[in-house]
Length: 381
Length: 91
Image (cartoon, rainbow over all chains, first blue to last red; front, side, top):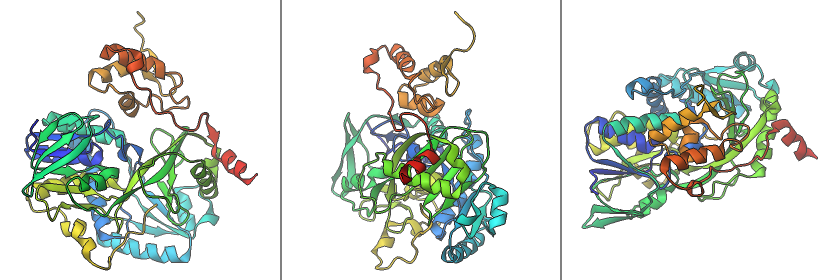
């Protein structure tokens, strides 16, 4: 098999990159995945999309991506429903320190035309009446944040990419990338040899390993983040409710279920994505404090998924400095789903050497060469 | 044969016709069907629909049902209210 461009990973990033390249007329694009579509982080994520970040790089990715999601069903000519809703993210400040940090965040977000604002406790309870007023001191709200269905969004990109001639190979594992005289020559999978000079690393939790296959040291690691879903009920909550200090995000999706997750303190690095009773207990305790009425709901199931963490909790989107033809989109630190449209656009621009939509130096791997990182994203659960 | 839609997943009101349409469109893994139709995601977690859906997949692919992978089984075995989990921790 010959591929003009081989994309490793059929999560949201991989399919978005495939679509944007194919849409610009690139032929012979192949996407390879070790399992089924969305089997990795995309299919396990919290399904929220937000623009309320503490760094410019994340704000810009998020804003442009949400603009795409708004029109995605039309742009991609998708017959099914991607279940996009814009009812906001309500982020709780639980002490004075967070309140002041969020004041700065909102100032940054507003400077980038993100319509977030700060709310008092009573204003926040006008939006989500079942919030415990004792659990927070103020909040920030951005009405254009929201939700969409990761399976349907990935499927929309997949179907559009397939119509444009992209080939998808599922249940096929990449084993090696063969480089001769400083140039990518072929990729060996569990089923075949693919001749190609261009590889895109969109392998989510396995980004570090897929980097090593080409001798590239990508400073990312994976860690398990757990999540659960409840039985569905009639709609009672519009926005995602989130707190960094209390360690929770919780949203009612259009189907009626509540999705909620939290990070595990001192989580070990690796590819474990199992479920734990410790998470279940801590999650139940946290949600019962902040959103007491949700405690009545039954948990239907719980699962885990990989956050691919970068040192500054912002994505790495660039061509490898020492290997022409190797591009990477990784280190999303839990936010690859919501940034995917811009990931697709930027990677396609990098490969086709087009003028970039955003300042791509913000996302370049070389930023980690500096001894100090100026800008570390703190708004992460 | 009954012309009415035949419900195969009672938790999510999915019909066998929907399953067959997706099979014809190339979604031939249980996990694919689950992600597109929500079969196996409801309160019974596939305990009612799984065998029927595996049989549909087997028939479509022309393989034995033993060769069709099951979907991933996850905790909890039965739905438990969050506040009951919290209360059990205190004890």
